[in-house]
Structure formats: structure tokens, C-alpha cells
Image 1 (tube, rainbow, N blue to C red):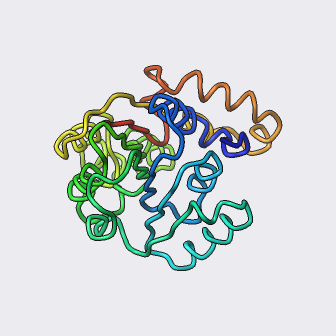
Image 2 (tube, rainbow, N blue to C red):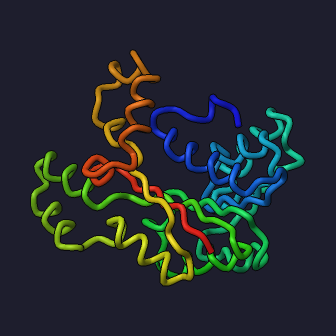
Length: 231
């Protein structure tokens, strides 16, 4: 995959995806990107030789996706389908994908459990789901630091389905028939350091993110949690 695909904010996700694609051991995998927008993941995956279907509710985002794919010369391997995650089961055939991406989607849908079940249904047996969710611990700390103490306490007590702990996210996927194999923190410090510092040495920031992504307590305070789960 193109090295340009990974910066400090997404390096951990790309590292997990590259390892999974290598483990599956063949070219031309079938990938579905739920909520994939303008193709930040889809186009580099297509450039690596895979076929990617992006499901997204925004026609503007899908139009931008197709332009981006055409510019990259991979429009024959990228398809856009308009629809939201809740309608995934109606848009994509059962047992059809080797890999499903669902990044920053479960926090905003009406029923995360239904969407998780649709992810599992879309995967072939042995296929993997790449799931990115908002981390409850990071949300609690962010609100507390911002002086929103009541909101922080509500989240601390388990309110707000838009955020997950690692155990909550893993349990949700487990109920859908997916077994979580890996959990990493994404953006451990990338959202905390000043922009001028991040821009000054992005390679060092990326290296730090990769080094801490799987380590407690750093993983546990990252802005997002990335789960790789298997059907």
C-alpha cells in the first residue's frame, strides 16, 4: 500500500490492516468499507490490488470517492453504494467480503448491535472486521479537562452509547458472532500535541503512536480504539 496513506492519526490502523492482508495471503481481496466517505482507506487498498465497495449515505462523498479513484487509476476496482450502515444487509451480499471496515460508525448509528451483526453477515467465514470506535475514557478526560464535569461524570458512569470501552466494544462484536483478536489505541497523543509540534516531526510522532498503541495504560486513553475481529 502507498506509504502516503499512513500519517500519525491512521498509522496504527494501517499497520493492523497491512498485517491482516498479508495474513490472508492473496491478492485481489473483496473489501467493504462502511461509511468510507471519500476513500481515504478505499483508494489505497484498491491501489494495492484489492476490490473495494464503499457504502456511505452521502452522494457528495461518493462522487468525490469516484473522482479520487479515477485520479489514482483504480476506478475499475472501486464501487460506491449510497446507503447508511443500518441498511448494509440490503446493499451487500451475505458471505461476500474478506475484510470489512467500519470506522467511526458505531458511535452514530441508531442500533450498533444491528450494524455489528450486518458486518458479521457480510464477511465470509474467516474474514475480518476492522472496527474503529470512540474511546469512553478519552471522552471522559476530554470533557473534564474542558470543564464539562457533569458530562464527564455521566460518561464515566456508562452513559452515552456513542463511546465504548475496549470491553464494551469487544462484547458488542462478540454478540454479533465476531471474535476480537487485537485491540489498539489510535491517536494516543496525536490529538494532544500542538499542531506545530506534530508538523515538526511527524515521523517521530508516528513512531510513538505505533509503540504505544497496544500498551496499557497508553492504549486506554487514546482518542479511539481499533478492534480487529474475526468471523
